[in-house]
Image 1 (cartoon, rainbow, N blue to C red):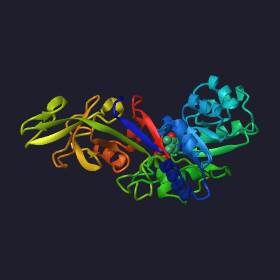
Image 2: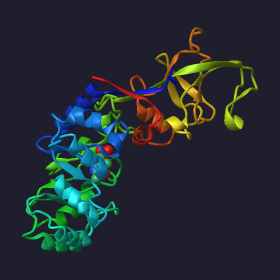
Image 3: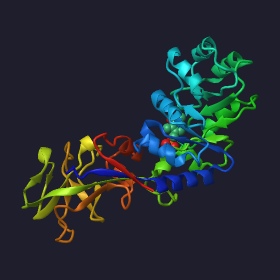
Image 4: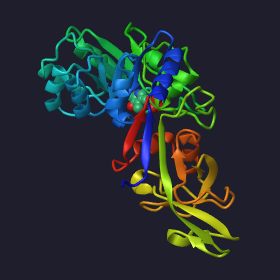
Length: 357
Ligand SMILES: *Cc1c(COP(=O)(O)O)cnc(C)c1O
């Protein structure tokens, strides 16, 4: 007797999508990006599914990285935000975690912690994103501080608009200028850059969203056109059916009012499950595999769907698919004014998750 909502993670699809990343990467090695609990898909299961395929895993959360080591993971682990304070460094050293360094004072911290010269580090350059990273002078200072103390340095930057109009060339030019006299490996591409600009020099790519079946630029090219398969499918059931007369409204705020007789279904899925509350009337949803739309405001535990045009037998007990197989998360995200990343990451802890192979 459990609430009927569930998320199903398709591990074969995850592995398939990794294969797509591998094809686009050419000779580059791949960090499978598994931050934020593998974008909501479950870190342990994503890592187990990809361990024999990937060259390493990249994430943010130190305690999760330590768990992966405790579970026996041997592959390299890249910590995308590095360390935040000196007291984390013993764990980085013990568990051979590769930090992304982006601030000059972190180099002194490394030295104080007796960082072993053989352990790799990444240096992050700010080439236009203006979040983390060294500028040209900072990079020179960082290289000087590391000279003779760390042997294995990779240069990294992150693109601001690889999925958009500006593309990556303007940042690649800055990267080339800043690193002109350095013959070091580099790590540049996220999913968008890997799919759109596979030709850049790039020793380690960092695909995230594409592994989970989201298109990094759904307005340009759909996930299906990129040969990406949905990994997470979120489903629940219709737990009640209501008939509306013209003039009846649905849900909080009465934001949807019927202009004719209608039949609606009430689905056991709301914003406390991770469905976006800002998804407006008209957001696509599947009922028993048939496409229809949401009606009215999403509430904490329920949302309403239009059954008026569906076969009369569709009713209580019918299966609602919020996104996944048959309904790309990108379409739902776009209707709700967000991106698939946010839908996946927001999947709530109360939703039971199963997996298929
Ligand atoms: C999250 C992240 C990625 C992956 O980005 P996608 O758009 O999901 O492919 C790559 N690099 C860094 C630094 C990140 O933080």
